Length: 346
Image (tube, rainbow, N blue to C red; front, side):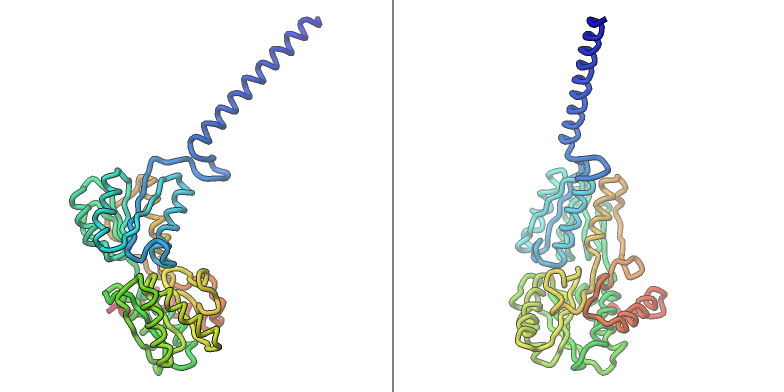
């Protein structure tokens, strides 16, 4: 009896060792696949590769390109897709950067910004079996997804904020390159200001660049010196200089504000100078289209995101905007969505 008991115990221990080994093997397999299943950690590694080519503003522009890259990082975390960016220092880099991803067999190649439109078109035509996508321009090619935004609508709403909150009846706009796209920001902003404050003056200054903070600082100084107390910028990395100028004035006791662009720029530059921001959901657009590639539902074509799509608008939190002003903003938002108010774009 004792002998039978001993044999049973040995057999039980052997089975336990085998089961433990299987468990360790499965755990190793999960680790090798790049993460955990649903319930925590990163998604299992995908064979999808997504590349992004920046405009000259660079991936750390605190604005447009940065929003797009943060979206791709989120896609990597959520789906396991491999993501990478190449930074363009000049327009001469667009073609080779795009081709590096396309020739490298990437599932999708993004061009961030309207300046890449010609390069996207050329590379798409030369590589008809590749998938490309672009933000802020429409490229007519059967393998390109074009995403644009109703910037004029979102800019109208921050114009309402500026028109209601200016104490000098003078506000400013600093643009990057003078282009139809940036004009939509300017025109929508001015329309919003005038809708609630017909007596307010809008001073406009284009710097001609999206990557020159020193030009943004000089433009802001000129506008503030001219009596404006609020500036809305749509100038990418150049806008860093607008914020720097405002910060130096606030430190010296002058109350001035900046309205940010593309993302909630109070998170970067602080609530002491950021009145609000015209959030343009570049991140959501990049994430949405990129996930379509992962899911196998990618479809070339054109998509425009507006107020009704939550593609543009104010941040969820606006610490420096009183509730009565936010109520007016909401009224105009609903009127724009319903079509009662038509926001000019040119």
